[in-house]
Structures are given as C-alpha cells and as structure tokens.
Image 1: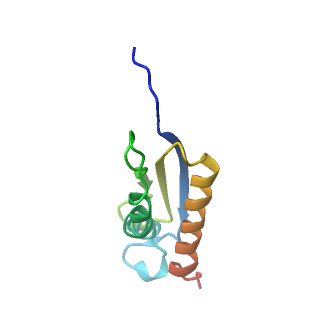
Image 2: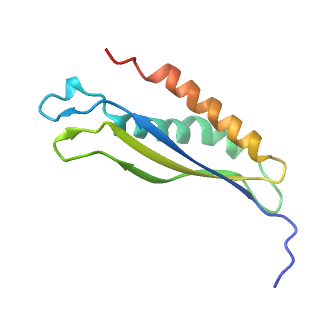
Length: 120
C-alpha cells in the first residue's frame, strides 16, 4: 500500500447520434449517424484535446479525453440511423466534474450547431 498525494478524477458519458436510415443503394435518402459520430470524435481530438494539453499537474500530467466505445448501424446494406459514442474524461484536482462536463457539453453543442444540417 502506498500513500497517494494526488489522483485524477473521472467523468464518463454517452452521446447518441441520430441519423436517418436508408438503403445503401440510395444513401442520399439517409443521414449517416456513424459518419457524424466519426466527425465529432475527430473534432474533439483536433479542437478540444489541444485545450486540455496545455493544462498540467506536477504529479499527474495532463487531463485526458478518450472515446472508448463506438457502436452503431443496423445492417450491412443500411445507412446507419444511430451511433453511440462513450467517453472517458480524466480530470485534474483543480477541475470539478461539473466544470469538465460543462466544458465538453458546450463543445459538443458548438459542433452540432455548426456541422449538422437539418433533415429535409
């Protein structure tokens, strides 16, 4: 047993991306939830993660964000109508869980507002 003088915290959540199913022979009639989910993960990696990288703790290093599970699709010949993304965010002692959640919630809302066209 060792005495621990600092520890990262943890906030986890799931995002459900909803699209519209269509037959894969007519993909223009659907909205690909997996593609939107992949774009969101890329956005968080490219835009949000660098903001975390500038934060540091002398014993713990940097906070982190990992998309640890992705599930989606209904069949091989269908444009996927849903995609589930599960995230693990490790916080530093200077961050509260609510602050970490609010920060990511705001970023996901900004992504959604700028990236997803309303279905016809």
